[in-house]
Structures are given as C-alpha cells and as structure tokens.
Image (tube, rainbow, N blue to C red):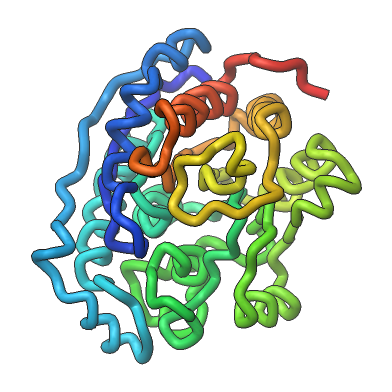
Length: 307
C-alpha cells in the first residue's frame, strides 16, 4: 500500500455494557502498533483520539426515541458523526484511516466516512451479527447494532447519521459468526448478506472462506471497508474482549485471513477498524498486541505463509 496510514483512536464504551474498551486505543498503541506497521514498510502517523463523552454525563434511556432500546444513542450519534468527518478528511487527503475502538458502534462512523459517496463492500469479521435494532435488541447496547444501522434496517432507515445507502446487503460478507440472537438469525435467512460461520471455516478452511468472502464483498463496488472485532478470535488467543465466545478463530487462521485480504484486495481497501479490545480483561496486553500484528498483516506484513 502506497498510502500513509493515519491512526485514529475512538475511546468509546457507551455502546457496550462493560467498561474498559475505552482504553482499547491506548492499549493497542502501547502494544506496538507503530512498530508493527513500520516492520511492514508501511508509513504511518498518529492522528490522536477523538473526544468522547463520559457515560456519567449522558442519559442511557434517550434511545427510546428510536422506538425501542438504544442506550446512549444520542452520545453515540455525536461521536459517529464526528468520526465520519475525520475519516472522510483522512481519506480525501490520500491517507488510509486505521480506526482503533472502542466498542463496535464506532463502525457506523468509519463506514459513513468512507462510503458516503462511493459504492462500498464490507468484510465484517466478528463472532456476533451486530444486526439488532432498537426494537429487537435484548440488551439495548448499540455495539450490537452497527451493521443494522449501516444497512438501514428498521428504524435506522430514517437515521441519516447511521444509514449508508451506498452499502448494499449483497456486498456484505460476515466471517467468524458463532453467536447470533434470534432476530438476527431471522433477518439473515431472508437477506442477501453472505455469512460464514465457524462451522464453515472448520469445514472449508479459512483460506477458501476468506477468498470467497472477499469476492462477494468486492463484486461491482468501488472499495472495501474492513471491520475487525477482536472477539472473532478464540478467547484463549484474545482474552481481552468484552463479549468472548468460545470456539473462535486461531492465531494462525486470523493472520492467514489478513494476509489473504492484503494479497487479494489491497488496492480496494479504504479503511480498517480494530475494535472491542478491553485491557481490563486482558492478560499482559496480549489481545492488544495481537491486534497490532493483525493490522500489520492486513496492510502488508507477512507473518505466515498464505495458504
């Protein structure tokens, strides 16, 4: 990649039900992100962190205005609008936005920043579906809604800060799924989203699954946005996440997938998120360090031999 990577932290934990992911950007930087990118011969700069309101300063119940539960949605909307503006400016300047979460609700801002005027595919790497709406959510946590928001599902269709019409279901590929709510399952059965569960990876191998997911996400689009939730990894590999689910991808599989991503779609990459690192729950910062390694692999560093 011949673009300079601009690192942008979004210390947001308003979308989650456990404190700690607000320290994720600092933990990832401390884990050696700059050094890993340099080892990939990838020029980079640090754009600092966005200002994010504290939970104590907001009202978690205002989400009822969306016709259901969406905790702190007013504050999250403000952060995502601000993030979209920063990401758009980074992209317009010719640099590559590397966004460090924070919880996964930051994806609403990143995607809208790069996809507001260009047809965009999404590679969503996550254990969870993130397809709930305020009407369907069991928890009210917005970090379980960002993909639904981007696709304009339910009430989000009328929310201009969230819904991104240049992203179509048929160009969304989800990899690593193993924990879905009932409403998400029902939606996915009738949608055009391409889904790849851990069972698919077990049966077909991570190389074949990643290759196919990239093909589906990039068909007839201008660019590809990648959102990587660290809970896609098995908790033995990445213990420092807020919503761990056993049976996830291994260290080798994650690196192989990111190497394939770079080999097959480097020229289409427009932004990358790394989200849900919670250093409070981590062991010796290993999850943050792994996030650094995976970012470098996605941007050109060869850690393993791509199958």
